[in-house]
Image 1: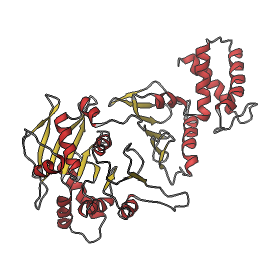
Image 2 (image 1 turned 90 degrees about the vertical axis):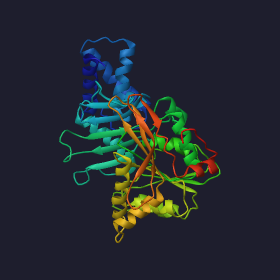
Image 3 (image 1 turned 90 degrees about the horizontal axis):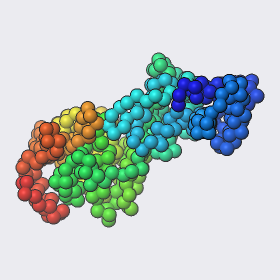
Image 4 (image 1 turned 120 degrees about the vertical axis):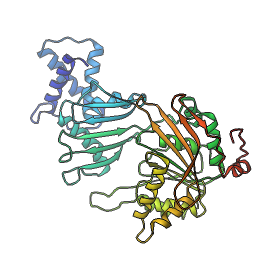
Length: 409
């Protein structure tokens, strides 16, 4: 939208928002059709006053944006509809960044000011019964389309409200898609299929935005249809199409500080629901102890993700988080349980150019201390995973349970 159209938009919004204006519209008024008449009246009046003539497409563009200010997402509407945009980052009213295909870029879009951005925040949190205040300056929420949104306000932010929206993807990437886009190769994908079918416990590690959940989603596709699967997530991200899947999701405190359902609550309840496997979207707190114990007590083939910079660091972090969940467990006991429970670590990296790659597929070696044996490693020069020809200790199990054979071992 050029500067002239922006000026028209801003003048119309100012008149519509005027407290004592003839056409005062309450933010949140439902129905775009209800808004069309008063908006058009003011719009025509502004054009007449400024002696401006617009083409029909320009008129429609301005009108659509004005109406979206009241019942939609204002300047974010086009970004939310853009399939190439995976994440939207709003740093106050005048800076909107997006992530496209792994690369972050500044858009030319902005809100008219802090008031419009605060209106959007109100629209997001009002249906949830959530509160955003100086005492509670953080909110995690979910939009109707499944997208996740994190909101931060003053006094934490000094530049206006901060919003981070991770869009919910309706396009489910299968393992063949990940292979074709280079995240991993077909040899590694077939090896991982055998690991999942053979019920190995798998941990996926990596930094933020590396594709951990996407890979987890792909691995879940390999689980046989006759198994009962329970998924546990803070906010729904997994898009699992298999039939016998029971999704469970946490719930935050309400405005009275009651009603929270934590990841740990879901884990403990899941154990009473006869799961064959438990899939946790991510572990990052005391619930690690519950996950490790589930992996060790008959729920083989369970999987989760964790933020870490390497497979060994992922195991170290599991130990730290497990100790947080127990009052009397020693480091030695926690380490022994983790080494006994976790069979595999798959590590991902997002490179500066936006490429997401599996860089290590590693077996967790059984012993007193953490150690891994790389089965596949990433060759950055060739931009592909390569076998190390390291035969995993569970190779016979893969052959027996998943009919897996490979000349690499």
